[in-house]
Structure formats: C-alpha cells, structure tokens
Image (tube, rainbow, N blue to C red):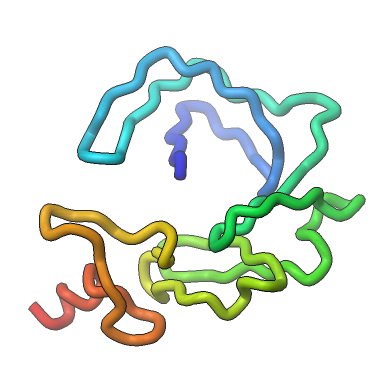
Length: 128
C-alpha cells in the first residue's frame, strides 16, 4: 500500500492509473517505506483497473469507471478495500482493514484474529 501526502489538492478516482515520479525512498520500519514524490499525474488514455485487496487479481473497470461487475467496496474505520466477487466474505478487520494477506505488523510481529472481523492489534488498546 502506498499512502500519498500531497502539498497541492488533487482529486483521484479509485482505480485511476497515475504516474509517480519518485525522488527519494527511505525505510521507516521493516517492510515499510516512505516515498518522496515530485509529481503525480494521471496517465492519459490509461484504462482504469481495480485490484482485489484479498486475492490480488486485476480486472478492468466498467465503461463508466466504476467497479467491475460483482465487485464491492468493503469499508473499515480506517480504510476501504476492493473485493472481487470471490472475496467478498474474506476476513477483514473492521477497524484497520487488515487481511490475511496483509496483516498489521509491530514489534510484537504480525497480528492475528481475535474475532472474525477484529485483529489483535486493534483489540489491544481496548483490552489494554
């Protein structure tokens, strides 16, 4: 996952294909990186595609740019993920949006499931 903080406001559509000009990369923790980006521009004529956050398959958007047929947006408190029709019921934390494929990591290691839709990293503050 890449999170961009931008100095100038720019509206992007989900699934939009963009060009990033990276000018610096720094490791912030194991498996996490901070990218300094000089320019973010849409690629003209690029076909919008969506990638499932659970199985990572890609599929072109519908003609109007919306999600492919049968796909859904799954919303957590801190994140929204896209799920193909085969992955609509896969586990996802209701708070942070982590999945079996992309667990939270900390100095204690990866998170685990404490409830069907709550990971140990998000349950810890409530239990702590």
